[in-house]
Length: 204
Length: 204
DNA sequence: ACGTTTCGTCTCCTATAGGAAACTTTTTCC
DNA sequence: GGAAAAAGTTTCCTATAGGAGACGAAACGT
Image (cartoon, rainbow over the protein chains, first blue to last red):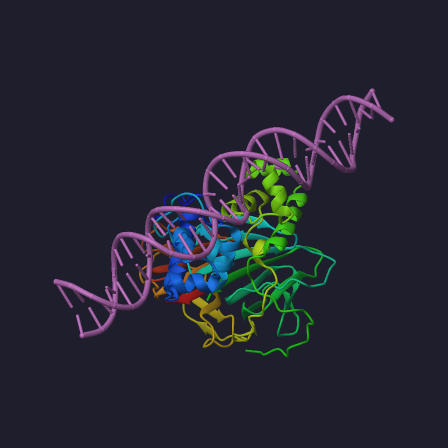
């Protein structure tokens, strides 16, 4: 635990991005150990050579994306886990007392995510606010899915939450849902304005 | 818990996983176009060769993870966008899909808690809204403390969050904090009105 | 139409990723 | 403790990733 340098900021910048070689290697090794696999077993499962895996874990190579992809599948390391990592600033210690507004901001065509904390490695939950852009489309073709649980709270606007196993749910400011995020889900704003949603996500 | 009758979606199952080369290339090209960048510009920004980028987009190579990583940053293609892609089904899992408003209500002299889900056994996180009553007292003597992590988001009002290891933090609507709830903590409303706070708590 | 520029592809070469197997280290079991 | 087995590392070689620049193809202006 570490004191807040200043009420304002004090917390270094940090991005949600893919890890560099060193971090990547550690993560993969950890994930493999976690599953109790040997190099041999893991490599075989991922259809790669065990020497390759060794090198990756020890950061002695610059693996191809494809190789990493296979490892991710094998080790069930998925997106958030693998990619939600502090990028720069050797932020070592845990800093579990962070204030909002420092988070990364990233945008897709439909969503606009703002992370509500500055460092994720020491945290088990991931809080963020999404702005769901108002669209005409009510079409839906791209489920979001990630192992774990998720809590969602509508801050403003009005939207429809589509899920794989339940009927669409219309939600307004103040409404909330809790669901298994392994189930496909996704939102569409149905008001003129964009909808703002607070999510807290928990990896399995 | 209100199990909502499932409805046929007709949409294929899909998992969160890294895209294969072909999809990857398309995504990258789309992202680049989206930003209105030429190969030259994008490649330079990502510090890679433009021929390399061309090959990646056309799936004529098996790029290294590092290269993809740089492109992700440059094109602001991050996790969700890049990795949410079709794959196999992850059928399993609980279907805890509950809507708010069913929760219980409990009141103390300072707080007034409303649980945001109706059933807790199948959930690892506990979401609830607290109304923190406006008081004159700014004094603080008994910390709240419970093993785990906690996320807090101020919905309205203004308050001061006292913690054992950090200096008091003044918070307004829209502010949030994430902290180790094993550390003593507690809130005091400092506005005339009551403050409303959304908490998501995770037991260890 | 013709040069000129600008964007994307292709060619070529070098550095290196990835795998097989040799080698080393660690663990297990007498 | 020592032999055998298992886990991990390093070596070595080949296929190829990645970049520089050549080439091609549109999109300008004159």
